[in-house]
Image 1 (cartoon, helix red, strand yellow):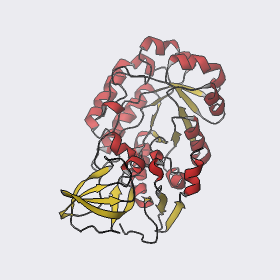
Image 2 (cartoon, rainbow, N blue to C red):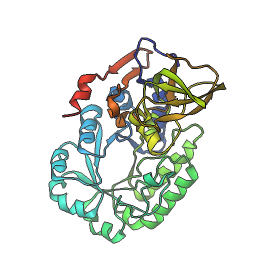
Image 3 (cartoon, helix red, strand yellow):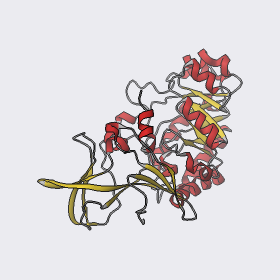
Image 4 (cartoon, helix red, strand yellow):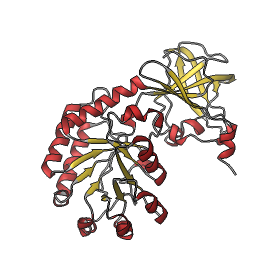
Amino acid sequence: MKIETRIGTPYYLIDEKKLLKNLKKIKYLRDHSGVKSILALKCFSTWAVFDLMSKYMDGTTSSSLYETRLGYEKFGKETHAFSVAYSIDDINGLKNICDKIIFNSVSQLKMFYNEVKHIKIGLRVNPGISYSHFDLADPARKYSRLGAISQEDVMSVLDSISGLMFHCNCENDDFESFSDMLDRISRKYEKILSKVEWVSLGGGLYFTKDNYPLDKFCRILKSFSEKYRVQVYLEPGEAAITKSCELVTSVLDIVKNVKTIAIVDASIESHMLDLLTYRIVAKINAEVGGNEYIIAGSSCLAGDVFGKYKIRDELRVGSKVCFVDAAGYTIVKKNWFNGLKMPSIVVKRLNGNIEIVRKFLYKDFLGSLS
């Protein structure tokens, strides 16, 4: 990708053509299975590209009042609300802006039922099965608080709800594992599924990945939907935006401590936090070669390291370094640690125009404090 030298680094560069590739697969899924896809705002909330995304997706799902408001105001279409736990202030803010409200527990559903009974109500169910590479993100981990466990509890509120949510996956690109999981859910909850109008199967499914068996995916979802006569929803986050964004940085210094270390004007702690949380090496847009570098961030955190790389081109002060797959769980988690300059948000539109949609200044840093 051509680097825009006129834009000061660091910046997130979202490419709408790359985004469109994912969105077309999402539309294909709807056309061939009847499944509706709603964007998981916890993963990606950059509303500067919502006009494009809303043409291919059916709405948004959230994890809080503020995310729900964002989806309602900036995306439109269906607005789903979910939270691990609501306060009464949350409920008062949500009850007139969301189409569906999903509770994490039977106790909260009963607590707030009278306030939201005019909305389609759902309940999250924990089936005790999941797919995740990380215990931290496993929705069915030991002592998980995510979703109702007891079928008896679920049965007790069936007259109060119209739908169910099963969010069991994290970064699952294995079709066979999902197919098996769907079969197990179908068998275990057959009596319950036949009594609701809609079912969300959550997010964490990489069905837009290259070579994913999308037609098989469509068939099993359509079969599930027809068997129980339910509208099926998916909540793609990463699947909607994967490979559509880069974090563009500049090298500030080159230092040596046995190995050569290039320090860039961004931070894994501040700008790609998920990689630090899960101990994942950042992927870089560079040709492989004989020059070895540790690429590190500019915060004071000793472990602020993007990774170790062997690249073709020699890095110098001022060289550009681009980290790929920088959309999901990055822009939504960016923070002001160390008071570092926050990356601008830049969009390359479908027509090729480059638009700086947001620059962050000292006043933004000041306003985040008190």
